[in-house]
Length: 458
Ligand SMILES: NC(=O)c1ccc[n+]([C@@H]2O[C@H](COP(=O)([O-])OP(=O)(O)OC[C@H]3O[C@@H](n4cnc5c(N)ncnc54)[C@H](O)[C@@H]3O)[C@@H](O)[C@H]2O)c1
Image (cartoon, rainbow, N blue to C red):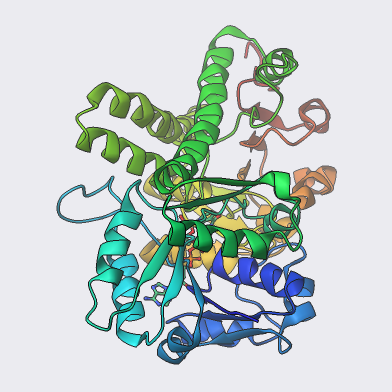
């Protein structure tokens, strides 16, 4: 039996520990957090995050070998293996502001581990970190006067919010990086043994520490790059009457390109892609690789453009003004099946429309509370409405900002009758049947497709 601890019970720490506890009944698994409210929610029936399948997984092990606690120091002392899954946001101040990772939470955790340890431990980086952070971690941990030695392992998490449980139950791969020393390899094996309880051995990849750290940043950069690439093509489609869905299908059937991540949209969001690419940009600049930095930075710029262009298109279409007009935003989450609204394009689009002095109503099945938080002071000017029919009542326009299935299944005929005419739909996720909407009387604008309007000469 090992005592496994996770510091940081957020979107990664909570679900990961739940899956480990479920599959490793022989180990005692504890997730701790400084946020007492979050821990109370993990202990309750109302978990702090929404993820399909999460509740069943938590319930399968909670109270048996899965525990949530705020007693960080005591659990550090008891742990054999410590996963660290605290947040690593983009730095907002000082050197590297706006690009580099803010490692203050990470470093505080490392110091807390040293202070409260009385036995050697394996410390696992689960957070996404700049390459070579584990070297700093090793230095902090091993500069102790207690004669304790800590092995640092990199085990980046590849789960995607919305499919977190599925991704962890059946991962494409688990990546474990460690030092090529004897004790490093023993530590790697200890982490391999945990995952091998449910993941086939050939999907567990072991590498050196630096490859593991860099692979996580590289994977997110490649995924985000595909989104920006198809969005760049979508803008060209809008100028040339090509249809981006047809282009995506045509290129995605090429085996070498493949069909995934080729959906044009208002852009990527969430807490990871932007921060991780900026982190890569900063690292490249740090090593004097300015062309490499500029190459990756363009992926983020393209994503910003996608949102401003969408708002510009809305204003243009609605006779160059949205001032005082009621606009229903369908979706606040950064993607479907998650309650997370961090860095959601919906939030930026909402802010931009508020600047145009539109009256905004947002509806979302799971993310309204988080949207309110993400909007900060601006939330006062926004109406939060869980019912999409009520949100669209008396609206001039609907903008689809999250690809929730629920939005595809609405009765758009009834909605059209309750809207101000001429009624507009801006499908920022290309999920609706545009021809059918046009037949119902809507003026329909999508991403990377010719508009369908009822205006003469348009
Ligand atoms: N969210 C994702 O989809 C995802 C996927 C893969 C990797 N990651 C990475 O995993 C890391 C965590 O991301 P997340 O989305 O779970 O973040 P999160 O904000 O949801 O959770 C982080 C948690 O750490 C806690 N915390 C911070 N400092 C602490 C401390 N000193 N002691 C105890 N708890 C502390 C916070 O209170 C918070 O609950 C990040 O590095 C992120 O880049 C995230």
